[in-house]
Length: 96
Image (cartoon, rainbow, N blue to C red; front, side):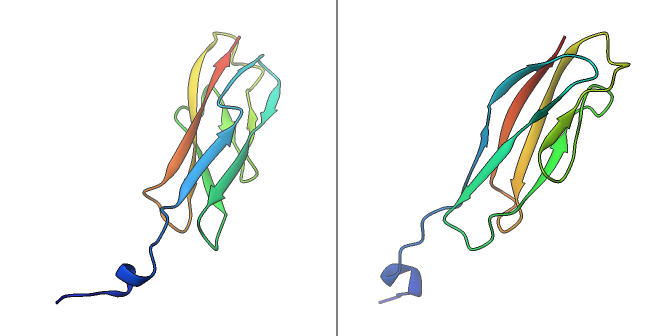
C-alpha cells in the first residue's frame, strides 16, 4: 500500500480573491484593490498590470491611471499568491 502524508492530512488549495472585481476609474484617479489569500501561512501577493500605459499597480494594490490616459481602455490587474504562484485572481479596470 502506497500512503503519503496527504492521505492523513488533507490540504485545502490556496485561493486568491480580489475586491472589487471590476472598477471604472477616470484618468488621473486611483482605485484601491484588496486581496485575500486563504489556506496558506503567507497571505502576501504580487500585483501586476496587463498594460502599464493604461494603469499601474503598486505593492499594496493601489491602481493608478495616469492623467495622460485619456483614450480610455481596459486593463487587467492580477494578484498572484507568493506561496503558490499558480494561484491568482484578477480585477478588470475600465478607464474613462
